[in-house]
Length: 176
Image (cartoon, rainbow, N blue to C red; front, side, top):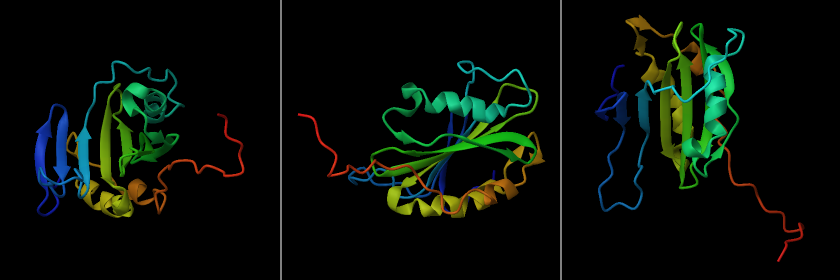
């Protein structure tokens, strides 16, 4: 993947992290810009569908969003399946409840039980930037030396609507 402009990068155990802005230690807000982690996670804990008619990325992300070990107490949307350059793919949106939001994209690698995951987080007041920057960042993505077409990423909903806290209804009786 091509690294954008003056972003900071560092390797992770299974991929690469791209950080748009590194905050100072004294800053109360830990995330000041976009943070993108592209990686191939271990999928040993997940059940992959036996049928090729079921989107494998969607099947795995459906297991992720229903497991608090992965999403904690975040507010999470249901995964949405799509085809990404002829590969099974899916995404979900997550509100971390700490003024950050996340788009998690997963693409299945053919003939394997492996996924490429793109985890994109931003401060909630910059959430609209995720949808705008993602096609540019992923336009240079290659898998096994094969370029991946970003047309499917450009077709994601615009704007991305991240889940939020349900609003309490003042007319609803409260128990005491």
